[in-house]
Image 1: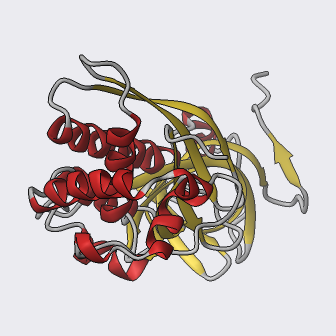
Image 2: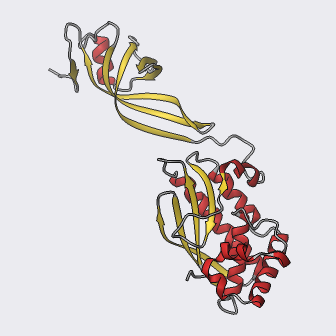
Image 3: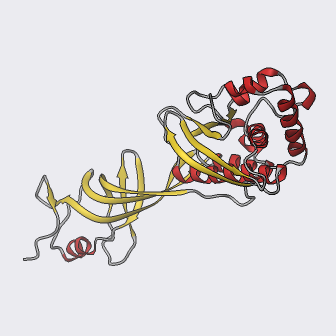
Length: 298
């Protein structure tokens, strides 16, 4: 039987994709704020803390245990109400329900096997608390922030809150609803997300810069051309002095330590800036194979 104090944030992910850790962390913080605000409305003397139990991939489950204390001690029915309101804001089936007409399948979806141990009086008490909290929009604003945060990660295609961490929720809010459910929580200014990757790459030299400075050399990877300053001063000085006469012909391949900065635009990462930090190999005149660096200082 599931405990009243267990709650999982479920992120439905695109096939083969991983959730962005920073986005997932901000969403988890928004979930915590949602639970706390609901609890504070229902029981102003309560103290709530969400503790991470574990997480699992597949899509992603962030499993938590809700520590709920009140001046009068733990109150299970109040905790049930808190979780029900949370399920309402971050779910699909319970929104807009009429208290007197909550059907059994809604209770069962929310509480699973715990539903069987709730008496009619228990359900009425919980429903009354839930109705008051929803009418007051308790927890709605931080739940909107959760949708706004998740909208920043294109890997997330749906979200749900569930008490059963062992199976995929039956009701998942699709990504297409994130914008409307964010309620304007997304900042008006454009939120720019960037990432920087760095690694050893093979590039084709299109045109060098044969003057000192940080002007951009032109390279190509596949069909994509890009400009990048070469920060390897030892290599640049050797080229300019004639110590390393690079081949001047088409399709000159070089091995470089390349840094790429990308921005997220309409769900796709686009390269915005390039930097070559080291040149690890390049062909010289009258030599077919690449010469490796560092350069011979003799």
